[in-house]
Length: 53
Image (cartoon, rainbow, N blue to C red):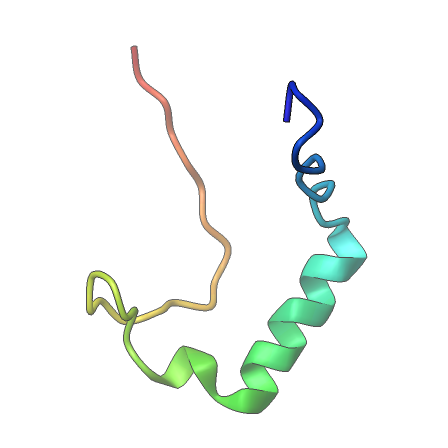
């Protein structure tokens, strides 16, 4: 990127864009299957992250 060989990454998604992604995922049934990486079930509820130092 610094040399101008490739473009910058796209900007982060807005709240509205994330909501559209979530709705599309629900319609396609993506959240019914477990995570392909860790095999844990997806949970469609608000999450809180805690950073302890």
